Length: 125
Image 1 (cartoon, rainbow, N blue to C red):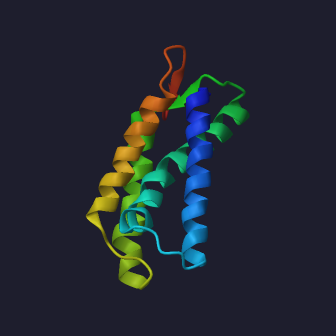
Image 2 (cartoon, one colour):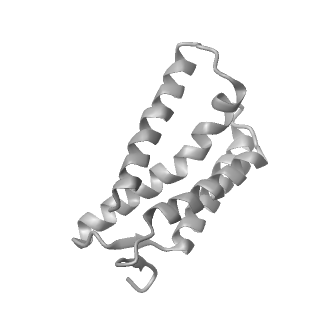
């Protein structure tokens, strides 16, 4: 796995955790950080975790997630957290900006993981 992807994953975990802890401690952060940063960070965190597990099980560090895999995860998060859960839980609110952030961060993950000597995970693998 590329080092820059690993560094981004660690940075995302630390930043997301800091924002979460600040919320729990009722430390007021700017609205942009409170409402959008973690939505931008979650897709690369989930995709990195999936990629890590796949690479360990297959024993091949050159495997990558395909754009279709990334779009699928982004769409699934959008459906669950921006459409379904807001209908059943007050804690969740539907926000189209979050949907855009899911897909934008998915694209960023794709380019961070891109490596010429790798091959993508698809249905046939």
